[in-house]
Amino acid sequence: MNEFVKQIAADARALGVREGSVLLVHSSLKSMDRQGLTPKDVIDGLRLALGDHGTLVFPTLSYMSCGPTRSLTFDVKNTPSCVGAIPEFFRTYSEEVRRSLCPTHSCAAIGEMRDAVVGGHHLDDTPCGSNSPFHRVMELDGSVLFLGCGTNCNTSMHAIEELSRPDYLFENCYTYTMIREDGSSYEQPCYAHDFKGVYQAYRRMEDVLNEKELQKGNILSASCHLMRATALWEKADAKYREDPHYFIGKL
Image 1: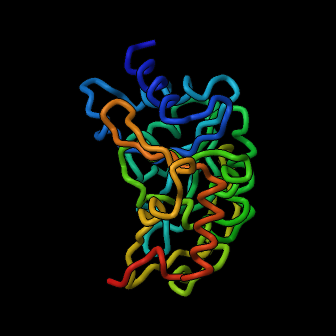
Image 2: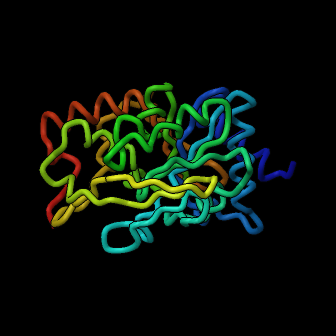
């Protein structure tokens, strides 16, 4: 075990990552600012912080290569992620990693609650529905870590938006060919998110959560935010119902 792994684990624990919990991670490798640091080091460090009974989850979104204006085929083993070096490495990090079946908003997970997190995503006809990993992380009392990337990339907000369905959220429904790990395929309808004419302002969630629900600190050189998923969901949903446009701005 190298020193990067040990320090990442120690920093994550100091930030508030709970041993044995479910942790969804948005990340920027560059922000950690260590020569020789690899995606594997980051993953190993976070797994060490979570312990033997924890579950590590990364979004492995693929909307840059799979979507209505691109390919309508999603291959769970081979379609690349488009949200950074760490998630792209993580999806093939180990044979124990499982990736959810969603054409645009998949997640991958490893650990004790892996199957509970990713196993039902194919049942949804929206990117972040009630069976999505984003929803499951909340149901399992997990946390969301923003590792050096700021909080605007908070994909869980899409899942919360889908509860109240604001007027900017959805476009049309498309049928995708989905290729499972064993190579078999099936057809899956899935709505596309829209957001035409607006920008996402999810960083406003930092003003909604209190200091117990949102913890701040560093992992290596990366400025980090850790949100308790239950608080994120409860307070964001209340804000959406009070003002459906609170977390967007007009372009």
